[in-house]
Image (cartoon, rainbow, N blue to C red; front, top):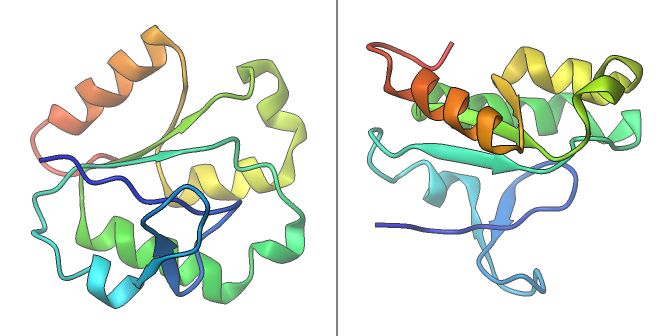
Length: 118
């Protein structure tokens, strides 16, 4: 069972069911899914710092709290991560791995460990 949702930079009160981001579902509806779902956030998480509002961080945290096996796959080269403030903040909310074959493997291994992804 694979479900794909879209967002731009961060998540506020909804995610989108189409890549054009014209149809959406609320975070509440997303959180009604089975807690055993695995969640892969995919994106560079490089955004304007104002987008990391308390509201957006609470939305992401609610997803990670519900779906304990959550990771963030970041396509930005690892060497640039320390220089991007928003990546540093997101890494604290969601375990982050490079979007590379090795990074994906580590992310899945982390998810498959007994307990939570952290």
